[in-house]
View 1 (cartoon, rainbow, N blue to C red):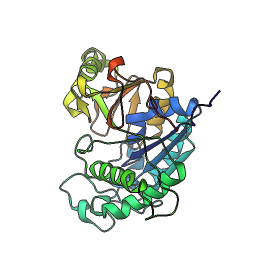
View 2 (cartoon, one colour):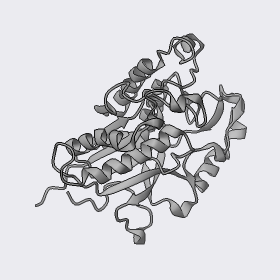
View 3 (tube, rainbow, N blue to C red):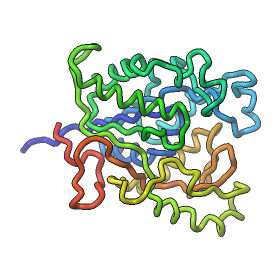
View 4 (cartoon, helix red, strand yellow):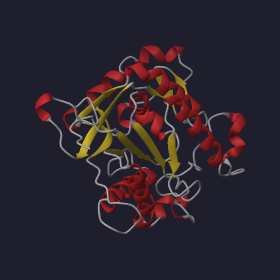
Length: 294
């Protein structure tokens, strides 16, 4: 009997916490199932707003020590998800958080948004050729909600996938990624998730409710190709998000970012297959590795 191929999943994210919010249940599910789950984070998130008052001194406009602290939060989150392979693109601090679109941080020295895409992609090519993932998960071309680092992470991930498949250029044998996914949320799922929030808000530690339009990656239902049921790993996802305490407040099944606006914590995560083949006859895929051959 032929053994099934070893499963190797690579996720490319902009900042610590993005991975747990978007893909925490997926990462935990595949790690628990024996897949090699690897995370590459492109910046340390130095420009993030700090939620706990006791840690406000770490912020970029004060001591500017938030980046290393967020690296420790990321390590703790990965322990909760069972992921042992997590790396910073080019090493910690190689690229700096670029801040929100249109701010002066976009063009400061070392900002990820200002990085040469091919140079940054070459660093990711090395990771791809080492790990040889069949599946890559990243953002859509708009970065989900327009953050410059998310947009740049998309550009770098897609360019690296292209370059990794070409002979030469970097050490290691060429490798073609079979399937590339974008993070998504079906609009009907987002609407259903928010529906009970008004009745729940009084018991939550958050003063206001978010809206569907605030969620990154919301698309019409028919654009979603893949549905990963991570219900069995919902606790791990919540604990991973809680580990990012400077950025996220968690009160399952809800959470809030620094704006204090509650939103659903989704244990089922959704994707759009951007490259590769999907079996539309059977409805949505239930496995990122469906159809993978090697």
